Length: 364
Image (cartoon, rainbow, N blue to C red; front, side, top):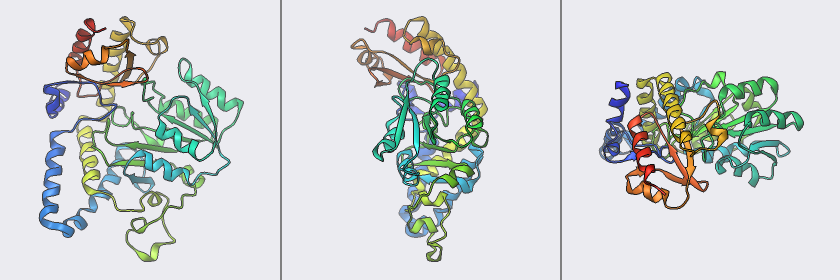
């Protein structure tokens, strides 16, 4: 606990507000701010010499991601955000592919499939979701299953362990996972997950700020997509390599920002210093306490209150005026899906939960 309290002390906003909004944006650690200031000061006085020298940060970040998620660095692409990565990826998917998605899943995951005219089926979310996914795949085969590991509105969690079972049962299936609301909150081992494509933006639970994201690929995925995007950065400025671009570099046609990816690299180090197993355990324990507290007050639907697993994202009803009431009590959260989305990370404590519950007593 002391490690997490020390970690919390590096986020000045938490001294003034109860921050329950990591699902929208993760907070800025003061160490990252200091690193960013030094980076740009070096750029100010060093110009192109500094920028060229700093390019090693990109490979450092790629290798760091590989260690963090247990994925070979050569199967990792750095992208400015998940949405761009997905759109590049789907340009290389066979047009007759059948796709299974979840109803109400994050638009940046589902819309790129829809806009390209893929044959799509949707599984309704709610109670028994994992069973219905298996049932849908058994009844009508698909080439692609595309899911967010954590649903962005209500926090329903789809375990990588479950996806590993799906992959074992349907080995030809391409499993595409959006981990933006999962990575950094919970431990994730790419090689053991059964996931073929895992993408995320780094500005939420990974605490890396905006402008950085990544795509991780299985060997199987590299054989199922024919991505054609290209550019000078894809060949590392070597004109002779135009016809010899690796799969992962197809997602990096243009220059990448060392400030943004260096920030992600720094943030990965912060989470590693805490230990991702410890972060995972802390967040699961906090999630359990939040779920119990909100459930006992009748603020969660039954399928979440009675579910075996859940993330640290919750959605409570908005009868009118409740969100505004929370704001007046310095509780930062988000209106989502007709309700109020609350999200807890490892810099939150039970005191934050107590402040929320106390405020709710006088809320509409």
